[in-house]
Length: 175
Image 1: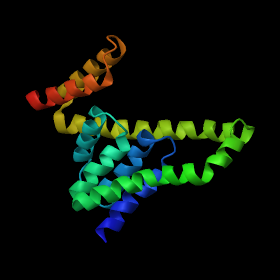
Image 2: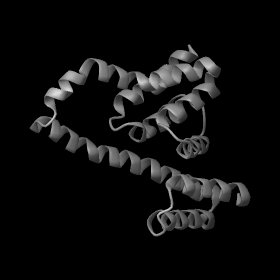
Image 3: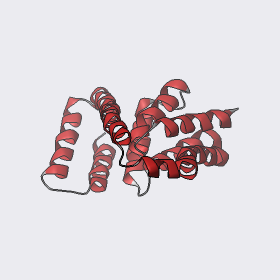
Image 4: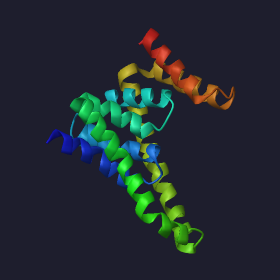
């Protein structure tokens, strides 16, 4: 039964997460943290940070790790398969239809309407992570990490992976 839960926890966000891995992260968090309570928000944030630090698609890395934690090697396999299956099915069965609709007014309208939803979902998860950081780490550490990350990304054009590594090192040394 646990493997069915793992499958659903990653398959449903894969179907509903239009926009790829980053768009499905809040949906995966809902399933993993709220619905099944396999981990806390803090643990999920750490898995997300680790997944962002590694190369490759974020959704499959998170699925593999969480699936392994919950159900071992088979759980990881089920989670990764459930994560990629919606995209695979879409590519196999709907590629021709999407090719026909591409460039039409209806398709462009649909894409335009979905983008704000994705932005809101990403904003919600960023706010949740910021709030949890503020509560767990304190105001000073949260402000230092936020300002340092913003400066590194915008002013100094540091690669995001290096910014994540900086945050990991900062947390390991000072927290």
